[in-house]
Amino acid sequence: MTDQKYELTTDQAEREASGAHSYGRYLEEFEVGAIYKHWPAKTVTEADDHLFCLITMNHHPLHINDIYAGQSQQGRNVVVGPLVYSLALGMSVSDVSGKAIANLATEELSHPNPVFHGDTLFCETEVLDVKPSKSKLDRGVVKVHTRVLNQDGVLVAEFKRLVLVPRKEPGEAA
Image (cartoon, rainbow, N blue to C red; front, top):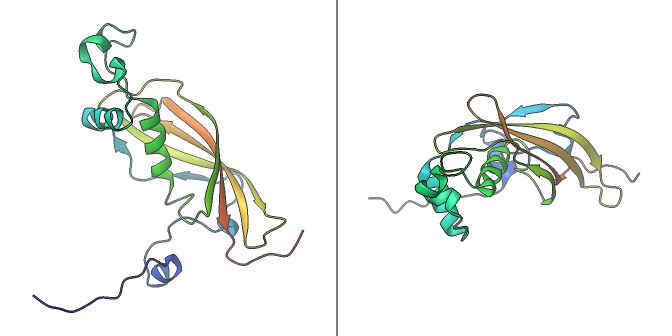
């Protein structure tokens, strides 16, 4: 065993300068119309769903009771919607909000089709708008649209969000 101490850093720029992959983007790196296909995909297990329901105190039987869910219109347990949203949001962080100063808003969240235990979720995010701040020259707001698809390519969730991100190079006042 060694008592050697290693230098640790949480500074993203320093970490990326070491050759590590970029995490998130600066404002200048977003381009309207770009679509980021997030990796990896995530298979949602029964354990994921039940744990999320129990942690968030959502005890609706459609999510945690096989017998109740079997008598529903879906005929089986449905994964709770906030878990689907949370997974998609998390899957998008390294491509979208990894450098975020703040997540400002989520808009138009919908779940057009159910997610079931064992479904694998794939996510992609399209850049809708990029606006430098007029009052703070070191940042700007990016609006994105994230889509969540199951293994069959069926849209199971989508949402838009506004993310406040830093600029790599502070701009000039508008």
